[in-house]
Image (cartoon, rainbow, N blue to C red; front, side, top):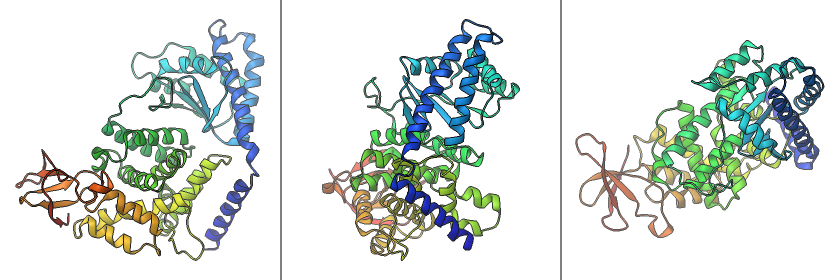
Length: 447
């Protein structure tokens, strides 16, 4: 307990310094160094088109680039440089590239099915020249990114991690809005949750920009889309749970009027909120499970520096099991929302066969003011409706079905869409009844 208290105190002091602006200049220093690194890296790539790798023309720029990378890693930890069309992000900060540098980087990486690089350790000038030579080589015809990764490992460049291609979501770039398929967004979120846990388990830094972009796509689809409320298929168990919590958290956060940026950070935190279990598993035994929220915040702290977005994510992860009436103080808004979303998900998972979803929701509503913020838990009730998604119900014509989405509006709070089930197998049919048009729910059933 002494170690836990000291760790909490250290984290509290760090967060206090961030709020006081003690680290205000770090972001700008990372941005400026990132711009120099981007320009130098693109310069080496261009040199590789006209000179052999052993040409002396590489010596000075490669040495300068190695010094910039070393400085970046010393100040910001592992450096992730990601190209998104003509924009470049370094550790979640958009840098201001020189004319066409962002486009040039994306163009060099794309043939290898790669959108960015993460440098987990400094590289000397010779290593940077080998890296540039590998990127300048023709891509493999099959699985180009995997082939490039294998070449880098063979060149003793295993500390360089290849990042997949990122694309703007609708409204983010100049290409205009694109219709998004809810099922595809759900699959992307599962992959992001898996990748986030994988990065943390391997000692790498998470990519918050990728998490936020995935959440942005989910918000673009809208959390009311019925496909988002079916239990995700595929992915690891922790990823499916994380996605379920994310959807519910964003429903509550949207109802509470959070800004788009805060919603993105809420969703990003939700996707990795339970990652602290990785440290508990590594330590062995059950004692670490009780402190997984603190351990999760420690893992998220691997991303160096502080910004308002990072502090929001850290507090949400750290406080996602704190009671509203905790004597130590209430959780942040994002932490309180994450607590509500996870508790509802766990109630359904553990007790859904014994109680109806409406009963589980009612139990949480009664805990408003003690376990939960009363306003936020009411937002959950309002958003899910009288018959929450997934509820097994019997309608007035005797057929049974499942509610397929949250409340569509305040006027339709008690009249959801119901997908009818086959009587013999319990499998869903293609028949969906809109209770706003006809029929009503006769009773709710457990299960």
